[in-house]
Length: 332
Image 1 (spheres, one colour):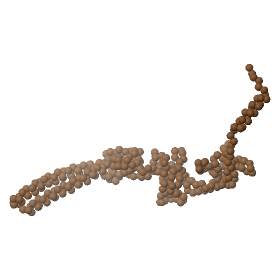
Image 2 (image 1 turned 30 degrees about the vertical axis):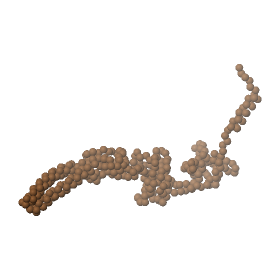
Image 3 (image 1 turned 135 degrees about the horizontal axis):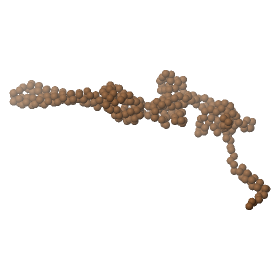
Image 4 (image 1 turned 90 degrees about the horizontal axis):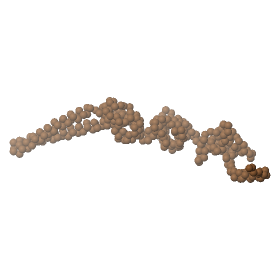
């Protein structure tokens, strides 16, 4: 069953609904901004290398053969940890020879002390002279001193044998192991290279930008597909091959691969630019437009945008062409 609604009543209902929608629709506000040149930093893109702050080789203290190698590239070690063992078979033979000498000297000391005891008895009975007693006393002292010297010599050889343990000089990551087990090495040769003291980015920047580099300046780092800010920690005074060396500290630095290259942007000066809020740009058909107020009317102007930068938590876009200083733009 159909219900007939008068045409006049239907028109009134539609009109009432439309008025209600207009009344409840939000009104878009716009800000008026007068363009003026602003000073922005000039960035130079360079590549930095991930390096360890301390790069120290773990060296062998004695010559011999590597009988044990307990680390490889990528292992984490602590300062003083044993990473390899070097053995010199001659040291064991020297210790055995010194032990034999100590046995001979101990027997000589026992005989000299016995001769001294008999000499004292003879002197007390008036059979021997005091000169002979002094000679026997000297023999005992000489033998005892020889034993002390031989024991010290044995301690030196034992210490050399203990120095066969190659220790990590610093806490860090093993970056290189140029030797293998059963390798014959000399004293002072490197068994492993340990990187410690933390990691940083090392830059090499052309010397014409040396005056613009200031310690503590913010550095833009592109790591892992994202951009973050670092800090210029140190600028070295020595210029090498026409380049200034500087270190950058970065909290989220990926240290999985040492000597990896990371894109870095360094402030090397300043320039003037026209900046508009990013919300002022409208893109249609691949072109960018900014609404400009001319003679009391708003017209759209095609522009060429440049770099995007943030100031005070607001995203701004540099306008390369299409606008001039002093013009008034409308920002939605």
